[in-house]
Image 1 (cartoon, rainbow, N blue to C red):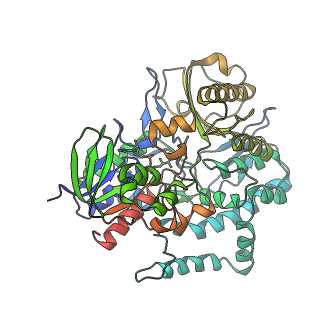
Image 2 (tube, rainbow, N blue to C red):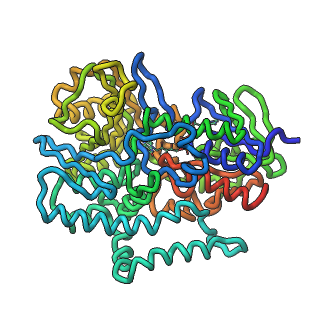
Image 3 (spheres, protein in one colour):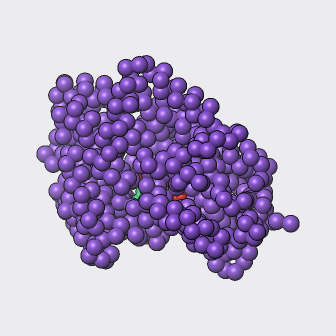
Length: 519
Ligand SMILES: Cc1cc2nc3c(=O)[nH]c(=O)nc-3n(C[C@H](O)[C@H](O)[C@H](O)COP(=O)(O)OP(=O)(O)OC[C@H]3O[C@@H](n4cnc5c(N)ncnc54)[C@H](O)[C@@H]3O)c2cc1C
């Protein structure tokens, strides 16, 4: 008799969402997490005495509405400092631009009336497209092959949502969807700060620059996310991002999920082409009717299942999943308050002065080099609320792009150069900040891969790009969360609709497992 109905490998937000949904449906579920702490890259760390900082994720843009309500995250402690924090495009002359408002379309700061109006029009149009695309996030992508129970009809209905935008808007959607964000911004806007901010937001977490083909799609993906019904919002949870993971853990426990941390899964046990359980690094074996991998698909098939149980074509296809990570993470403990030339610290601070600055940073990593002037998103959780750093001190969390995942001059040297260049950009924007640094921690994509098991250190556990989206994610044979191995399913960010702290792939996978019964 298997010990559990389902074992979920990986205790990140997707693993927790998947497990909770299954347990709510009456299944006996065990989540197994390799690290000591549950929550994956959304958990919190306390790297230095008196300081708390997010592991990787520091802002929320895509919390799935089903996960938020059906996991009752508010009842389990999730609340927000602000459900939509302002975004500040930092300028070296102190002439910053601040974007606020439900749709992010209200600008304060010196900007021409023409740009202000153009931005409102462009943002409104893109929000319309994003709203029409949002329902795709909650569906199992249809198979390319015809079969009963396929979701073609659902896809057609969702397509109709786009068509309902009207003939002219639909035509505009088709035109824009195929071009890059840089072209769109250059057509409509003249202000470099605004262009730089939107270009940065578009490629955050991606392996592409603003001039890469189809990059506009990623901006639509960003805008398609929502927080408590607010589309396109960027939220800061009270007490930091770790509280999202904590609320999910509580919800899972309430649903009856068993949680085991500090236990690395070394192997998925396959007998007669069927997954029957897992073997842990400790040697313990645990059986289950269903095994669900909420870690990346590459590690799942190549390491945990192993080449013995998959054919060569499938193994090659898995190896070819593109998962180059370009986002690095910086944490600083500061013994005073930095001054970003008068910018309000209770906002998301973005250093990306132009489209060119973002593209130049990407050009470097294409050749394994470190960019001279990296671009970045900065948050000081301690500026929003007490408890993140000792009184009078601050903790700074920054996502820095782009960092080479395979540096040509070696990992150690690339990490040092990347930190130095990042601090140099920071010092330009916040003179004196270097002198405030008590501690620093800089994670390159390869460090992120080592520490959190994300393939290539990639934000999405596999690049999010048109050719790895929807029924092509992670690749066609496994795009519906099921796999060729009976009883083995996928539920992590490497699957549709991709990464970000949303719980959506995990929830979708659970729905699919429940709708199919145990395979
Ligand atoms: C630098 C960086 C910054 C980011 N910032 C943000 C942000 O601000 N906002 C946002 O929305 N998203 C952000 N992301 C993306 C986000 O962190 C991920 O997309 C999301 O956390 C994926 O969730 P997950 O549950 O699928 O996987 P993960 O959170 O990666 O969780 C997977 C879990 O599986 C565990 N695991 C791996 N292998 C095994 C094994 N063999 N046995 C047992 N356990 C195992 C890991 O330890 C981990 O806990 C960021 C990503 C990066 C790289």
